Length: 193
Image (cartoon, rainbow, N blue to C red; front, side):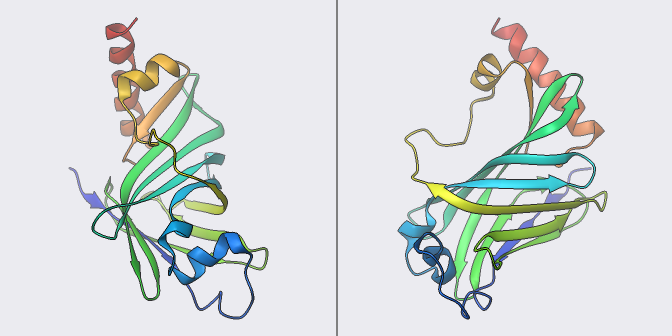
């Protein structure tokens, strides 16, 4: 049974008020400059049982004042059927007076809140749990400008260029989502040899 899954990420501004932040974080801390927030952020993290991952978080401002968000992470030492595993979540971010709320629509049975805040080393950190109650910990620290081609993808194009990687989109990783992605990958590669 499919359930809508929402992850809320909130950047707490109160933790930023007590110290001067480097220029790269002022846009996040104040949320007063959308151009400072918009971009592709380098993301690192770790999952309790799947281990470390690297990736990117793209924040792209839309006409209605919100941001489209794409989160792409590649697990470093976690494989499925000999394939590297990539997790992709697409959502929306809404700036508010107290932070930035990011919502991802995923299939899962319960909600998880993700709170980003700036630590002593000027890194934005978050921790949240998946439906199996295992912890994700991640952080973003640097960004680059948006590129012409978004982090969003076309599945057939992805597998032709990344034949050794399994991409699971808008779902938590579990046996079912990995199996579905494995079958989709096989079909795409058969259609585009």
